[in-house]
Image 1: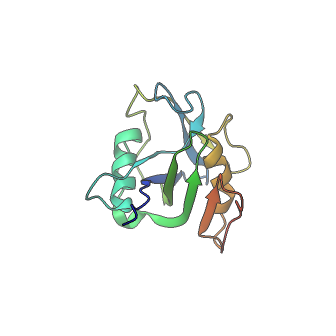
Image 2: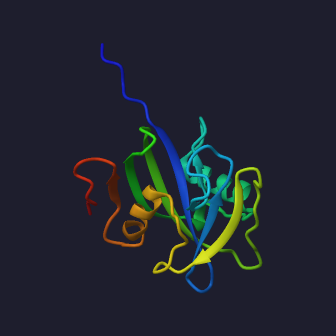
Length: 155
């Protein structure tokens, strides 16, 4: 019998403020792309849905409390990353709830937060996140690949 191919699953958050800017965080002391900017994200834990993981990561990483209904699905990306790991990444969008302000919730893993408009992301940006951003912001596309030969989005 063949063994199945296992892949980690992660949830990513495109959090927008009242001006339409997206929140980015700078990775620090993680062992992966430290010093690069990314968006709030994390692995889905056993028994947790991807939506629940996204809500949990928002609370843990940036101190923002979201409800499951606050999230809008925008993209699935099948990724073969530069670290040679393969993952399934789910991207969700949400608006910053009124009265909340993001903060660095895990200072041992993040050393900066920055709001940016889609035309001017902070640099350097984690490569697969940079590749996903135009697709995640395009409502006609819901699936993309990264790090594979075909590498093109599918609508």
